[in-house]
Image (cartoon, rainbow, N blue to C red):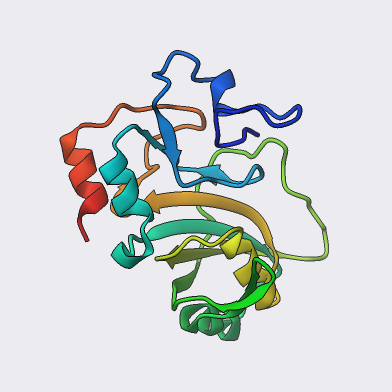
Amino acid sequence: MVLSQFSPEGEKQTLADYLSHIAKDIYPVGRLDYDSEGLLLLTNDKQLTHQLLEPKYEHQRTYLVQVDGDITDDAIAQLCKGVVINNNGKDYNTKPAIAKKIIEPVVPERNPPIRYRKNIPTSWVSLTLTEGKNRQVRKMTAKVGFPTLRLIRYAIGNVTIDNLQPGECVQVDASIVQKLLSR
């Protein structure tokens, strides 16, 4: 588990613990919670960062989400329509999402592993959003009655974590940037 930032915070490991060799003007595009995993883009391109984070551009982010319980069609429908979550102490209506129940994806083991309860099944959802409120995916799945156990950011735009292992870094070129910005 690593904080997706370079500055220290308590005793938690940060990107600086793993990427001390990169330029000081490189920053993460968006953040992952400490207990989330997956794709994290690092750049010093302020225009790219703006285009990916500015809500008006509605860039898709896709998450693979393991939830507590066997998620229902009704819960999926609610996620697709959008739900009301708490955002900074206020009710917020999330934008409609693309949500679907999926078979368990082939993903690396998580360290530490998620909690396991013998008598309660888990299921997986692919959830694509065009906004990124604080802990939004976790709040959305909890709102529909299926708390998030594991959260993996699978894609930003058309760039995915396919063929990458946890902690692996890849330097991107102009074609990857184009994939990020294409719809």
